[in-house]
Amino acid sequence: MFVNLDEATFGGYKQANQILKNFNTEPKAMLTERFKDSIGINNYVNLVITTNEDFPVEITENDRRYFVLQCSQGIYVRRRDRLVPVATGIKHIPAH
Image (cartoon, rainbow, N blue to C red; front, side, top):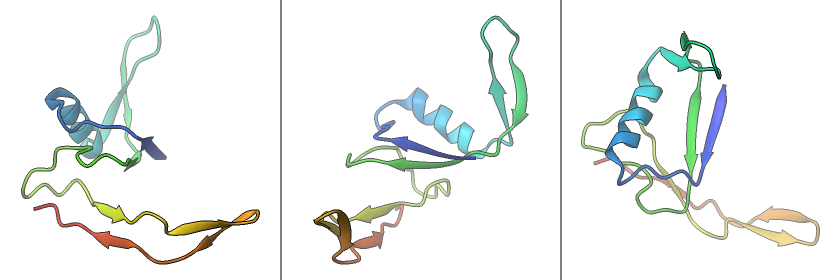
């Protein structure tokens, strides 16, 4: 399952960061339905976080959970009824 967390930020929230880290690495996730007991299910989720924030998540040195890309603005321009690529403005940002 592919999940995009659009404009989600966890940068300054220690508890939310820990939940995100666990969700990223644990083979099981807890599923809770209303008025029912929680059950453990297999975790097949692949997370992507897209944001304009400078500090969306806390990434510590030697943390291997995240792959960070910074995309420049204006990669595409609108030409009439479609988007046309202008440049490849993507670069990898090391975690440390």
